[in-house]
Image (tube, rainbow, N blue to C red; front, top):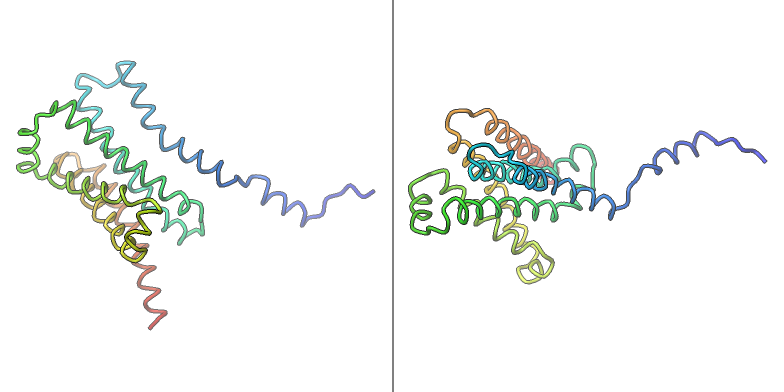
Length: 216
C-alpha cells in the first residue's frame, strides 16, 4: 500500500487542519471581548486603580467602549480588504459588547461618580460639551442595541433597519469627539482612535463609490 501523501492532499490538509468552526470562533471572540472587563475586575480587587479609582474606572470603560465600537465597525472593511467573512458574522455580538462597555461607562458615571444626583448630571450634560456629545452617542447606541435582533428587523423592515443602523458611524464620530474634548491636552490617543475611524470610513466610502461607478 502506498503510504506517501500527495502534494495536493498535503495542501488540502494544511488549509483545513486549522479551520475553526463558527461556534468555536464565536466563543473565542466573545472571550476576547470580555477580557478587558475581567482585567478591570482584577484591578478593582487588587488595588490597581490608583488614587482615584472612580475616575480610573470611568476612563477605562470609556476607552474600551470606543475601541469595541471601532472593532465592530472594522468587520465590513476587513471583508472588503482581505475577504474575511467571519468578522461580519460576529458583528451583532461585537456591537452588543461595545454597547455593554458604553452602558457600564454611563452607569459608573451616574451611579458611582454622581451617585444619582440627577440635577448635577443634567447640569453636566447641558454645560460640558464632551458629556453632551457622549450622551447623544449613548442614546444612538441604545436605539441600535434595542433593534439589533431579528424580531426588530421584521417589525421595522430591512430597508429602514439598515438606514437606522448606519447611525453607528455618527455614534462613533461623537465618541471620538467626546474623547478629544475630554482630555483637552494629551491628544495622542484620541487622535489615534479618530484616525482609525477615518480609515474605516474611507474603506466604506471607497466601496460605495466603486459600486455606484460600476452601476453608472
